[in-house]
Amino acid sequence: MKNFFQCVFFVSIISIAHSQSYRPPVFTDPDRMKKIEAVFPTIDKIYKEYAEKNHFPGFTYGIVVDGKLVHTNSLGYTNLAQKTPASTQSLFRIASMSKSFTTMAILQLRDAGKLNLDDPASKYIPELASIKLLTADAPAITIRHLLTHAAGFPEDNPWGDRQLADTNEELLKLLQSKIAFSNTPGITYEYSNLGITLLGYIIQQVSGKTYQQFINENIFKPLGMTHTKWEYTDIPADKLAHGYRWRDGQWTEEALLHDGAWGAMGGLITSIEDFSKYMALHLAAWPPKDDTDNGPLKRSSIREMHQPWNISSFAPQYKYPSGRTCGTVSAYCYGLNWMRDCDNRVYIGHSGGLPGFGSNWRFLPEYGIGVVCFANVTYAPTVPINLRVLDTLIISAQLQPRQLPASDILKQRQKDLTQILPDWKNAETSGLFAENFFADYSLEALKKEANTLFAKAGKILNVKEIVPENQLRGRYLIEGEKTTLWVSFTLTPESSPLIQEYHIGEVKK
Image 1 (cartoon, one colour):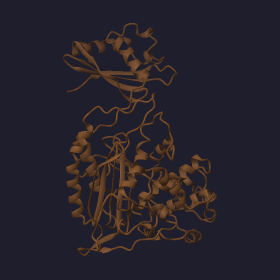
Image 2 (cartoon, helix red, strand yellow):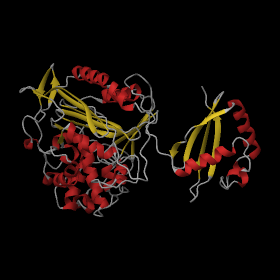
Image 3 (cartoon, one colour):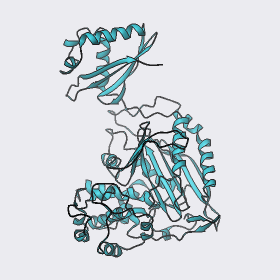
Image 4 (cartoon, helix red, strand yellow):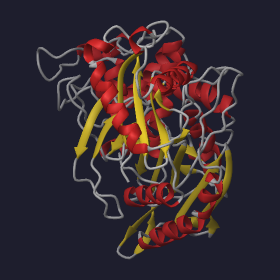
């Protein structure tokens, strides 16, 4: 299953119900939605030109805001012979985008106490116990190794794509045939469809149901993904996207693959409308909050899925499609990819590619937005377009990361600190500072620095609200007639947190 960042577009900014004790993220721009909507025509144009240039027979994408599909577009056909138009209800095979459903099911079983992630995989697949690993000192393959592409199996694209319909018996026969390893388990990343396929078999062994039945009942049904299927023969003809390959200046149809044991790594068939519900589940896990947690997987476990467990690449000279150089580091999570760029943007999602299909979804937890797209051409090369659309959306709509609500203690310490500035009067007896503070800072130097800066600022006009970095660290502005100052501080982990670190400076024009 091709591990590309491939795409169609889907932006989701989740509206989150909240308890009385929880204040939702603050969007400093009240016209944020209007700015997003203003970018829709540009996005449509970008996708249309790219789809035509890359010979996509059919292509579909949508934009979701506040949990609603507010803008969609579809291009071309899902069946060229019948001229069936693509739509957001068309059902495309999403290939390796299936992987996170399998890993989510594993975490459901873990949370239910049915397995542990560090269990040897051979506990559930006895055939693995007799496999000869690459070296004599190799550790046993664990479930966590399988989740993070660290089991030592070789990268298996595109061979793995063609195994989709194999039975469990054929899978076990493969394991018994002295399979080859490229690495010792646990030391490096290497993309493995076989590894995720084994997770599907473990789901069956632990739950007593096929992985398809388990995921249908425990993920699709709670989310209302009523049109998502594993086997293409279960889909009405007018909804099924056929797959094509562009060769010698024309499209040739690819044979559709039946579902089987390997479907756990890439067999899902779904629509933009159905998949948007799954993306909403992931986005709703951010930021952490006090709301009722009644989804099909605990929000803490969903966030665990999003953590970078196994570094896969580092690209210090990476260039966005716009030509802007911005280094990136990438890692694999649990059935998901993770990437952080030089602007500190974190992207999470996964791509999919099979003969006849290419797809991708990606979201930014701190921005509350995400993208998804489906195309019905073999291994659709949509990495550049996906990044271009996200970059265009963020820049054109002037989007900023969602601001965390400031904790009560941060706001109180801001008030306390501001009252003693710039003279630091009675600071040592104020009870505001941690025991390390005046051992680390010279009181006379603090007074001199603050008085110099306040004199430069002139008459103080306004003290802005603190912007939290987290619940015990923040930064705020003090606006003067002549210049603006910034103040930052960090609190201790004590029951009544005190200031342990402090800095002040002038905002540079």
